[in-house]
Length: 359
Image (cartoon, rainbow, N blue to C red; front, side):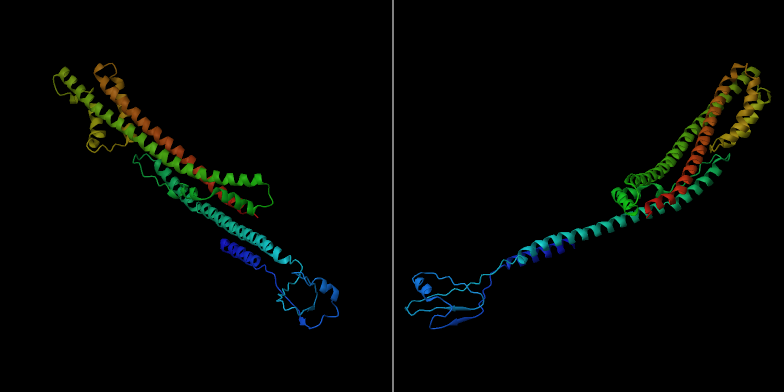
């Protein structure tokens, strides 16, 4: 639209300039056979032989004619003043076109800035509901996470808090929008508001990435310690079998009723054998119901070198459970920290928007 207006104005200027022509105008010409009283006869006679006769007139002209049988051509040209308007009009029109174009472009830029700024406001406001839902989801997850149940539940992470939508927005347009709405404050303050906005978005992005990273690390670490626990139980089973064989050799009979063997066998049958096939151990129950009682039993047998394999496997199992417990505690602290930060961002959102929109 701006280009069309400018082109039309330039064409109009050129058209007016090209129409610069000299008009001929004669108020009246009177032919008389005799010389007029106003014209000096001697003057005419003296110029009779000349090729060109210049006659000046204002409103009325009387042309002298002679009978010399010669063909004479009379050219009448009006002597007029310079018309400055027709020279100045194209220049004025040109500058007018430039001025109009500037106004149109300025209005167009303003509309663009307002539209972009309102998009920033809309996207910032759209964060409020996902933040509330994320906080609620993390709080519910934290309650279940602190229970002794070892099942790792899936963590709900809202993709709308990833900050991807803000990457398509123009940062320069944002600062122009803030400046448009805050004309009375210093430009340094405008830059600070803009930086706070980008910082807010960066925090939201960071929290989203941190949440996913911490959960994946927790799941990976827990899986590693769980594998270690399973290996320690397998090692214990092998060591317990060897221990029974050594006692059988000593007793030359089944050691099931031997006080050195029977407590361990009963404990193993109650807490380990039911879960060997499926492997769905609860490490915290396993520590309380199997490993801690086993510590007391083996303490009485510590002088018997044949229990060394049992003690070694037991220690590995307890260390693995301790590793799982630390991962669980670490994840609980991360959840509490992220929830706190999300609450802070939720509280500061409306204040930030008001600073951007302030008039």
